[in-house]
Image 1 (tube, rainbow, N blue to C red):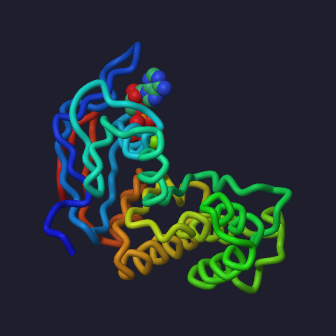
Image 2 (cartoon, rainbow, N blue to C red):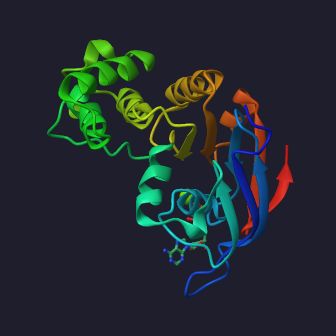
Length: 224
Ligand SMILES: Nc1ncnc2c1ncn2[C@@H]1O[C@H](COP(=O)(O)OP(=O)(O)OP(=O)(O)O)[C@@H](O)[C@H]1O
Ligand SMILES: [Mg+2]
């Protein structure tokens, strides 16, 4: 384990063409193995921060270093390599409806370059780790919301990422299921993966109880 933070952000700003800055000179270090919540009101900049970490968008100013990669200087090939080290989970699951649970996960394993037998083995492994191996032949529409999110999490774990980012992963789930999904994230974190979850759900954060960054208008206003 290195002593360097897995995420090192300094002076990060993001301005869109119109409106107030989405992020303002944000500075943040996340240690390897941490579990962090990012919370704050709608429009605070939570999704913007995660999008910048995933290189789905570029900062207006400032520096982001993740896993030793300075995100502003990566070549196309390095961007692919960098993204493979990161798992991402969204509020709306984003499963492929025409593929079974197993096929949804195998699809990612295939993109990672695994052979067919490796794909199946890996997919079974990650589905087992989220407790869904018995549903692997079901289609997404045959699953509950919580189960669908588990599949999405399994899919995000396929590349064995060092960092897992989740944007409102429980936004479509009832409170009981939301807590279950958070506990799954805690388990994944206990296995060594650094986890960052953006959520506006303060009650859920209270129940889980982790380092929490509160964003407001693009800056960190509180660390609890
Ligand atoms: N593509 C975009 N173009 C212009 N402005 C944007 C864009 N995306 C976000 N913004 C603005 O940036 C600010 C931060 O948005 P962001 O989506 O990061 O907030 P958030 O904290 O994730 O909010 P929510 O809790 O509603 O998901 C908002 O003022 C928003 O309107
Ligand atoms: Mg958001």
